[in-house]
Image 1 (spheres, helix red, strand yellow):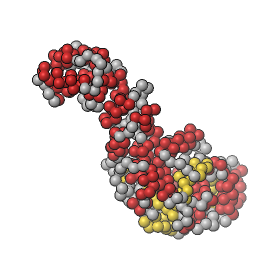
Image 2 (cartoon, one colour; image 1 turned 120 degrees about the horizontal axis):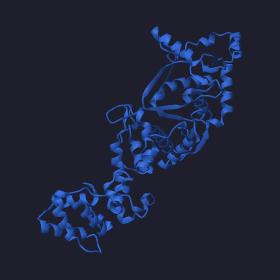
Image 3 (cartoon, helix red, strand yellow; image 1 turned 180 degrees about the horizontal axis):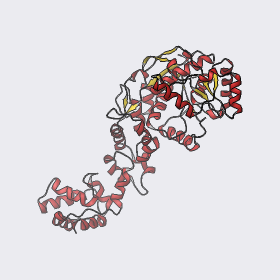
Image 4 (spheres, one colour; image 1 turned 60 degrees about the horizontal axis):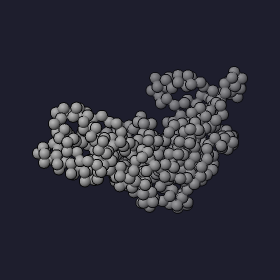
Length: 446
């Protein structure tokens, strides 16, 4: 195999979400497994929608995931090269000017539907005489440019989906150049892939038609489309098999990070999605070594937030204090982290327990437990407190009240934390301090 070279080419029109982060990760793992090149490029020729804040966010999110890149460029830096390639297509008759407005095109599509025809472009612009074109321009209409597709079929052996074919006559001639002269992604990607010698294109199965079109454009530019290999991954679905596309924006990488998902958990989960590999925590080095594109299925992958949180919880439960110290609330120490890490799924949940320990939470009134709580107050040991204070206190309470198990512990937990479940009170009590514990017991018993 020649040296592998892949690319991830997001458009900076929004934040990176789990769907395109998965594509980035699989490309990166593929390149690193074969000692190849991972290229990052920004498809930013859509000047109306592309924003620098999204560009910077994409770079930051990839770094947060632990991904690096060997090459980087923006398509907006290569406009002269695209113009050159477009001229070549114009000269060989494969790029032709069109003048229809959006309204006219919509009317044409509707007319074809009524006739039972596919709503594809009718190539009317090809029939315009040079005089008619000049008249349109004189009337103030700037042409946009379509690529004249071949009449045949594009076929390739997909590394994930198997033999694929796209019938080009069933597709509208794609617009490659807008009326304002800016090139579109479909065209720019082909020029970039050829110029930078990409060897493999790994992307979602929603690009299969694009692949057929882009292979035809490659041939028109004088390149052999078979110089590239393709792998199209089925799109993510929800746990019940529903389309996940509408939810992807709510599953942005930065929102997951903000909620307390750790990059190691997310990477391990995304690397397994759609493959025969079970979701399990593994360092990047291990994921690189074991990566195999052949493990990925042609069936849709299901994104289950519960599986992700399970991995995240496992990771948090064994994470040393030094690894999270800078992400914990100010003042939180190692004793606090060791007390709460076994009871959280997301890192930001630690803030809630910090409030429980040192904040001003108000326990619910527990009138039915008033006598028990008053006994607990009377038996509350004096300070200084140590880890055994919980055992000493509850042993005395058990002897005085005859309570044991849930009847003994649950009222205390609810009065002291406001929660029915949580970290061991043996670890929390010394962190809370006697004054705070006494105050909450008195409030609950009032």
